Length: 329
Image (cartoon, rainbow, N blue to C red; front, side, top):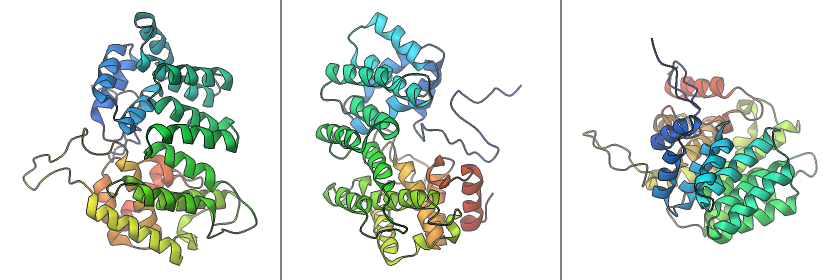
């Protein structure tokens, strides 16, 4: 009998998983162990992660997604009451429970602030506050949370993506404004980041998030293939810059002889997120050869966004993209 797929992974016949762990196989294994109550595996993983803040945030958010994470985090805290890792895992789980309607915002916020007090250098509790504020907070609360993250890690990848999504939703008038604040924010973040930072792709992320907001407001077609949003002069400029950055800084994951040249410990943990945004943009710009190169590098690690935008089935949209660019199913 074929065993079921591990918890948290949705395996399709064509290999797509839409697994939030992305290509971090160690994280996926530990998440499955945590779902079965083996919190010691999560303890060891987070200890090894150390102060790699982007990786720590990614791993804690993914670990917190398991329905029983809050239960096992409390179990962990019974054994180690002052553990910053357990406290932050509980905070992240509390936020995700709140977004699922299983916790109230005040309790989730209190868990985050408790974690922040216990680990004052760690941006992850404030990342959790920002995730919560995106759905339940005011614009000022989102900015304050983002500033707290950035004060601890100024190039925090996930936090910049969240702020781009929040800012993109601000709408005045009945059209897109080429000077919209989300475009300024993304350009500023890309310019101030180090040359090898994946924040170079943030202007493309901002462009997709703005399309989502416009399409849901009825100001752009619901089918991105019918939208001129991807073919304006400004859009082409940001997409070319991001694709050129990828050509220069992308890490080859395998050499010609099959020997790995990098590991999950050296590559950015959320790089597949950026590649999905960039492939989506290149596809709708009509640059199929470039889209094909990106889709090949993505492999099975599709992400739900931006393929869902504005309200599409991500699996169908991603498979259609592969058929168009690669002639593959």
